[in-house]
Amino acid sequence: MQFPRAHLILIFVLSLGLTAFVFAKLTEDSEDMRFNTDATLAAIPDAATLSEDTAIEEAALQTGEVNTAIEPADAAPPAPPKWQATRTEVRPGDNLALIFKRHGLSPTDVYAVSNAQPLGKRLRSIFPGHELTLYQDEAGQLMQVDYASGPLDTLIYEREGKLFTSHQVTAEPDRILAYKHGVIDHSLFVASQRAGLTDNLTMRLAQIFQWDVDFVLDIRPGDAFYVLFEELFHENEFVGYGEILAAEFVNQGDHHRAILYTDDAGDKDYFSPNGTSMRKAFLRAPVEFSRISSNFNLRRVHPLFKTVRPHRGIDYAAPRGTPILAAGDGRVTRASRTKPNGNYVVIQHGEQFVTKYLHLSKFGRGIKSGAKVQQGQTIGYVGATGWATAAHLHYEFLVNGVHQNPRTVSLPDAQPIASSEMPRFKQHAAEFAAKLDTYKTQVAVALAR
Ligand SMILES: [Zn+2]
Image 1 (tube, rainbow, N blue to C red):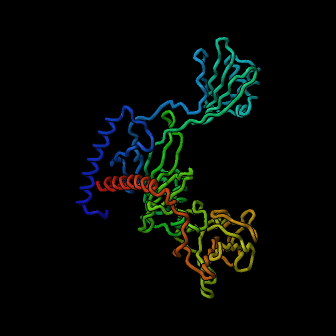
Image 2: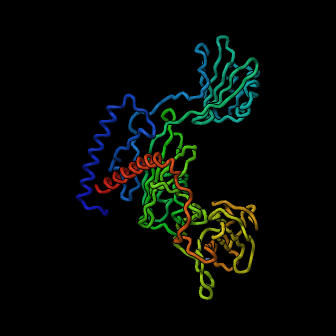
Image 3: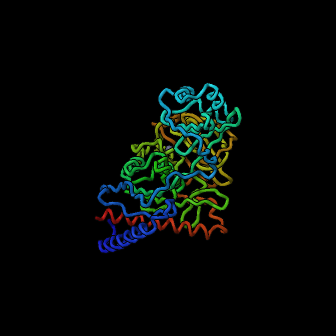
């Protein structure tokens, strides 16, 4: 570690104090402590569970109680108590008719419920393991059917005369803050898996930083990430992942931080702690990096004609068929084929910028001269057409007609936080920057032991 030992000991002692305080506070408040993201306090991860390569599992200790049986805000009023409720699980091979028959209900009921508007059709494909609740009145007449179609979703069918009506209720999950940390030695995906991140979360993490970090060419051993995200629970059961709330990515010694912020209009996006957007006018790497295995990361293709013509672009070695993305918003000025270039695309971005993509196996849908494209849109697929020895994307970036290195050229920023929102943003960002700092300290302390 780079910290002097004395500092580490000091941090350790301070953290112990903090832990004691946190636990004292939790005990004190536990009666009325609702578990949501804002109220979550991270506890110090158990050092014994840490492996050397810092994949910290379950750093989010679940402290306090998890809410159970939350009544959704827009739930149907509870069924009258005199109704008898019968809960039953869908069995393999079941259908509504079989289930109703088992419970002494008639084909007329099956017909009425499965033709309920607008959700009757949904009962024609019900899944084993899902739960149905049947409500019958004193006379045994079927009055209501609830079908738990997903961990948070319930379809409700209610009798109205001879017919049934239906609507869907979605429960609000409990959100619990979780932390993960990983250090990369070969690939982001390997490091993420070791740290316990799903591929989907890893993709989302990389997408947050895709304007600052070239995840194909610029990832190096020792690069690291710290990520704070939500785990969603309903009735004490894990039901999925929520948002990444804050993250730090360390790339070749550069620390990039992003904080999720919801503005007054309700739009969510990631910003650096000082309020600049994580989005930039151009992606750092115009290829879908998730498809590129670690083997490809550090290898470059040597162009056939390097000695006779200057190489003015960047080559991304990638498997044939890897999607190529428009680096920025713009208009296609050429989608054509020549002997040296193979299939190639040229995009004009405003007045100043032009990007070129060569050796494509094929073009993206609708990509032709004059087509408007958006940043991140697939404009073609990696191939080896033209003068290419192996499948790769040759990418060029021109500013005012002059070739520039897209990985080092300074680029225009997207809209920062509106000044009217700055005070609220600053407060929010400070809170999450502090959470990241605390977590990083915990990681450092745990590793130093
Ligand atoms: Zn090239």
